[in-house]
Length: 581
Image (tube, rainbow, N blue to C red):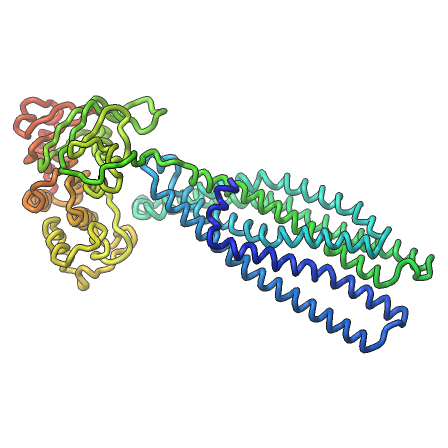
């Protein structure tokens, strides 16, 4: 997992290395200061030093402190740059990886989980990386230098570290081990919390329509309380670090003072001086504090380990769809052939969404697809641009197996307009240019006229420069669908798929759109999924789906005579006057 993440450091290797160098210099100076101070105290005590020497040593100590401060400050800057840059690269790599996913891959991860991995998890990894290149280098160096200097200066007094360091180290390890399970549980609960927020915000109109605000507050409160409980439990355990640290510091202080005073008195100051005791106390505090820092690093790295696992899980996920060798980059026309196609959404699924599909659609044909909920209509059209791959059989577009095309080339030749298609934050024009970023104003207006969108766009004070809010919430459902159809037309596809994308417009507007499509893109194959017969009755061919199989095909008049399902749908709609006018 670490090797995988290291690849995201890239241009921030230099700041990372510089951080280690500056931290090493800071640690050396910080450990040398108590040694020089101890010698100065001993000389003053022995009255064997002059005032100029004291001033010279004082200036040296001030200079060393300033250099240490500067080195630490520079290390802070370089470590911040390295860790923030690493997180930026990692977040970009993660986002880029997700863009390569097929729908099958996306189905494995909830959107809330992916958001958590790109935010909370990466923040944990960023903090851990900063601690590794800074604190994880500084703490062991200061500990090692301090222990060596303590034995050089204190002799027997340094045995206190032999006693106290293992006790503190073992205690911190036990505390970390006890706290880790609670930290691990938190991450999955973050996913559930984000999912609750996402659902609530996305379905705010439904929540308010059913007056379920209190229920949603309760659900969010329970998820938040769950995280709170785990964090409190973990933090309660980690809180023992403080008392344990204080015990070790005071034990070392008492040990050094009692034993050191005894040695000074018994030897008359010949074996040990006040300077050595002062240095021992300083080194003792340094050693214990750095050991404490190491325990914090251990806790943070252990927490981050779960985040790393979740991030690498996304990075290691291989797209289920990919280009073959020497893929075809040119789609000749919009002809579509299904040959013995069967499909299910996962290998583990027991039921096929589509079975034994055989279809032959010529370029420029208008094909209606009708059927009940769950009959496989959307599954059928999603196989054409390879949003999913067939489980069995072959699909050909322009006479070529879709698996032999370059994915980008294939999808550039197919436009899909969904019933709940999305608009993005920005102007109406910005959204339309998603279809063709080089489209002229004249082309944009023409596409909008065909999609019956130009009139309502012109009614806005700012026209095509009207700002669309996130998700297109400031336009109606019918307006949103028409904008999405115009966007798809600007792509000038060889195949246009309308997946119930005129469900929110009246039948008159629907008829105008279909008429415009016939004239505007006569050589484009048009597949129209609809719930109402009026949207497909003038199609060149109508496909009736039932339980994932083709029940019947033909024109409107023919199906009224030969297809019980089609006739029943027609009679129900005509009988109840369901014309949406």
